[in-house]
Image 1 (cartoon, rainbow over the protein chains, first blue to last red):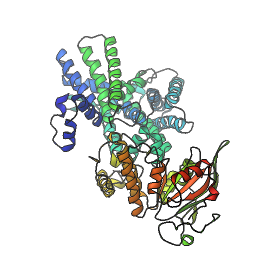
Image 2 (cartoon, rainbow over the protein chains, first blue to last red; image 1 turned 120 degrees about the vertical axis):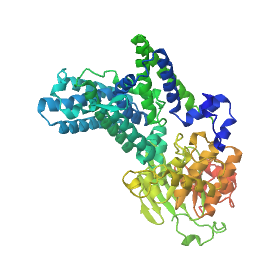
Image 3 (cartoon, rainbow over the protein chains, first blue to last red; image 1 turned 90 degrees about the horizontal axis):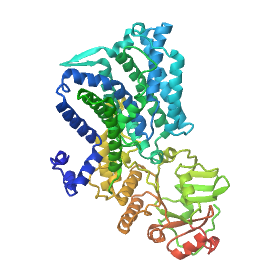
Image 4 (cartoon, rainbow over the protein chains, first blue to last red; image 1 turned 30 degrees about the vertical axis):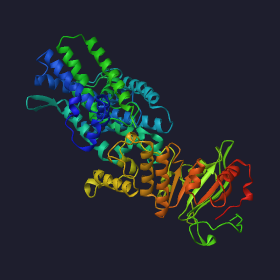
Amino acid sequence: MSDVNATSVDPAERFLQRMTPVQRVHSILHRYPALSPAVVLVLAAVVLGSLNNRFFLPSNLSLVAQQVAVVGGLAVGQTLIILTAGIDLSVGAIMVFTSIVMAGSAANYGVPGPLALVIGLVVGTLAGGLNGLLVTRLRLPPFIVTLGTLNIFTALTLLVSSGASIQGKDIPDILLWTGQAIAIGPFRLTTGVVLMLAMYVVATYVLRNTAFGRHIYAVGDDREAARLAGIAVNRILLSAYLTAGFIFAVTAWILIGRVGAASPNVASEANLDSITAVVIGGTSLFGGRGIIIGSLLGALIVGVFRNGLALAGVDVLWQTLVVGVLVIVAVATDQWIRRVRA
Amino acid sequence: MSEVQQQGIAAVPPSGEPAARQPIIEARGLIKTFGSVVGLDGTDFELYPGEILAVIGDNGAGKSTLIKCLSGAMVADAGEIRVEGTPTVFRRPQDARAAGIETVYQSLAVAPALDIASNMFLGRELRRPGPLGSIFRMLDHGRMRSLAGQQLQELGIGTLQTITQAVETLSGGQRQAVAVARAAAFGSKVIILDEPTAALGVRETGQVLKLIRDLRDRGLPVILISHNMPNVFEVADRIHIQRLGRRVAVVTPKTHSASDAVAIMTGAMDGAASPAVH
């Protein structure tokens, strides 16, 4: 990795040259949190591509993109929450609940498609807002709040749907629009993938270029310092949870398009997968540190490993094991990066 | 005013008829309790223009509570705070800041992972002019960075390599300098410094003390809370001594020695015997 930083010339970088190679790597990773997941993604792609030459086929890469659309979408909201030093275990539950509300209101109650979509977006936002209210008003730890709402929304999903899926033929076109294929050169993406990428673009802008974004970092970094600096901490937290809820609702729309139906039993592993993507993407679970694009890289890393290992004929259990190792390595790296020399 | 003005005590700098001068901030009879613990037991306080006022006291004397009330981080149960003669209520830190009172907390209240410029403008970021700012809420990173750099330079803090460096990569003294620079940039009336030298080495302490004098010389009165008697006697114009939740005396470095101040602070000497000065 040392060749990455050999090209520098400006004074600040020259100052870095005085450090040992390990310190140099540390300092660079500290400055660019998305660098390590980017390196891992490239290395993984190169190695897995050499194992099976079908890996780099446009059709296969398109498949990977479609496979990560849902987790990638959830990871946008999850990143916002984790940056505030929170965690959201209910993301998948909120998404599935919202997808059932969207599809069910249209299929069972004859609500027009666009209105069903809006209802779904509102319900998802409010579900996120419920987490936010419990965290800010009752001052409960986010882990406990979302562990509770995970169960609540899972139960509500089954109650509302009676455990039954809603078939694609009963779902209005607008809700299935996210499954529509888009050909970009040799790649066949879906509108859902594009929508997911668009969320990353918007979230990157908001986090980097707006006061709200900077305050999310500040609150997660040092809550008391943020309060004393005049930031309305609870308002920022509530806004973050509401925004995340909206993002989960958009992802519910992507999910309906991806599956082609709305089922209460899909994406049960999405809660933890979204956290995995964020953590592998270099965002610190302690808050205040990380970059949203890293979460997309994290989702892609998991997708690439699963896909590449499957193509190489490796058992699915080994894929899961590799993801587990990646998570631990990522968190260990984060701990190392957070140890700052003064 | 309940204080007895005794003859023979030197007039307090800066010049001006003591009776005619109006305090920038004054507090009357502040009371703050935490359950059965009494933090403030009817404290009076005043800060005059152009002075460095040190607040000293033993642990539990109510220094921090007093400062938190003056900076809006806490609301007193009873009593009155007046800013330039006008009764004012600070419910939140923002209220005090809006009144021109900036505080550098002992914890510094900086976000370690954010860079220097972001920290200096934390909570009052500048937006880009035009629709980029008003509609897209885009921050003006460039202007914030150049203003932050300017401010640091003005205060003679030239050791910071780059303004985009994360605060956690700075030394203790540099962090302190960033926090003080932030306060100086926005404080139009008063700057409150809570234990600014507690975590610093000798050289860095000297820099911060110089910074405090510079602020006063630029016309900003400073309230300095400190445990460090040599520091206090080096820079303070007047010294407010807090004991058991009350102000027991106000002395000056000219009329009292550090050991006198410690004696009053600990109750070994009667505060009333060394009357308050204006």
